[in-house]
Length: 167
Length: 71
Image 1 (cartoon, chains in turn red, purple):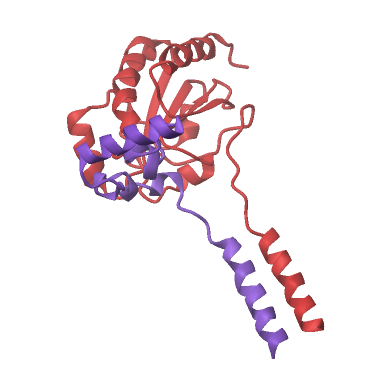
Image 2 (image 1 turned 120 degrees about the vertical axis):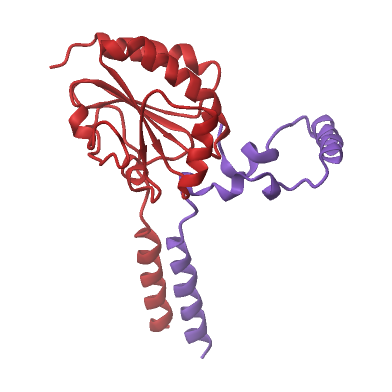
């Protein structure tokens, strides 16, 4: 009987110790990540002071085909106001990302993270996921998916973030 | 002997809790059209029509709803 109880106890501890995923919440400081393959900033911390909109995308993600033209639009409209959009690609193979980009070129900064290290740090739960970071380096919102009705709401959040004072 | 076997089973089953499902960005293969359940698109359309009329529920099939979870 003791063996069985012992095993139960160990099993319970083992099951409880299984790690839980945690996403980055609004108000938290943004995880510091490297932007590999980017022609611009090499580290996320280099963009401190700008409003940064990070979008985790992949070539196989359907809604990303909708979000890319929108993000190009936003970068063109508000780039002068201090907005920097960074698209972090999570494709396992770079050729897939390049194929996507040949059809939908990006007019914003791109980074490539095939292993998904930055996505783990941000606690990405769905694709696509976008994270809006304020001028003070704190996360303002995390958004999953991209639908037509999201465009206006996201643009309003961008404008609000740019209007807020950097502390 | 029985207790030892049941103890071993409990340990193995508890260890299965540490197996994590694929992360959101690792679902690229699931997004391929070949990974959907339906084989013939017209037939699939017919079947989905029957499902939605009988169960009053729709969606959940195809690339987005099934594997990759993009929405």
